[in-house]
Image 1 (cartoon, rainbow, N blue to C red):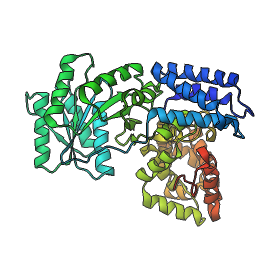
Image 2: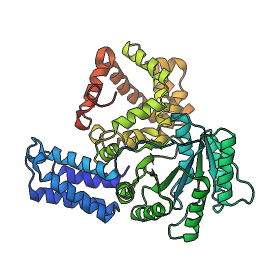
Image 3: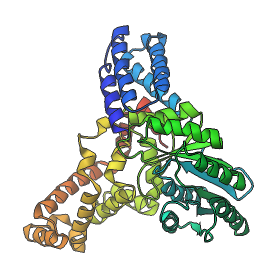
Image 4: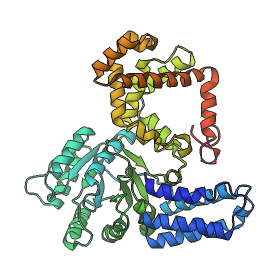
Length: 457
């Protein structure tokens, strides 16, 4: 996420890391690199100016002079100022209104509104025990309604089919009436993408808003859109009095301009962030965690929450008991863990939340979604006894497994080697080793947070 911005800011930070003393000259040089990184990320010029001035004032102040590690103090200032720019921690979607609560999604064409509507429905149903109804008022884009209906089926939410020939306003009104009669407590209204300079289309979304008395009016913005999105956000806010923002496509190499500008420019909180194509790839937006990711500190808290939300807790408990009692880790266990990785977006998605120094260069790229599927295929080609006792897998067995999985023998050898490495780590977790491993991880979290110290529970 925001890889290019993170790389540029990382170079500025590295130049000061470990310095015994900060001077006006080396701070000015670092801030020059920070300024260029933000401008290249398409952050609004006014935001860049305000940000660098705040960092300069604090970096030259007493809090850095008194610090034993001025370089680390400067990094902390960068983190705190990035957090401030992106806003206070979001309290989530406010649904405190008589049902059905109407949530209106608006934004530019191609911002990802339809996909976000389905993700939001899944989030509300799964995490807030709501009964959402999805409706599309996009009568212009071919197959727009069919797309939302298909996505609604994937997230197991009800879809309201538009009456033939009805206008967008009539569709939205009918959906709210249907929701009221069928005990839906939330209606998510997906509107057509529109340019903010198109007065007729802007008048239409205003009419939809008035007709359904939307309680939440959310601006859906592509993280890669940069300055254009910020200008559009101003116009949509003027037309709709927005209540919040959702960032989409934050899993790509987004420039980050929208994330670092839209909150400061509009004053509206960023509520969620889309981090992939899967239905569950919608995260609550935590400014301090995103700032940590941008600065290469990782986001272990979100990673823990993601694992807790997606992992099969019974399987995880059984595996933990098996490992801690020394009963051994086998290929059946590994297959289950690989399947869990795949469900959570693959190793690349998880690695993006770990501190940069904890990962070897290119680690995420080496374990992509396709390699996980190949590894699962290799394990599926093994017999039950081979999975339980990998030591019996000799050359002839390797050839048979490779043929069954449709991969070269070298792939089987590579998986066996990886298994041995994982098995060694698992053995270290016996008799308190797991606690030592967690303590080591805690020491690498920003600020030393960890279990028992205000960090992950």
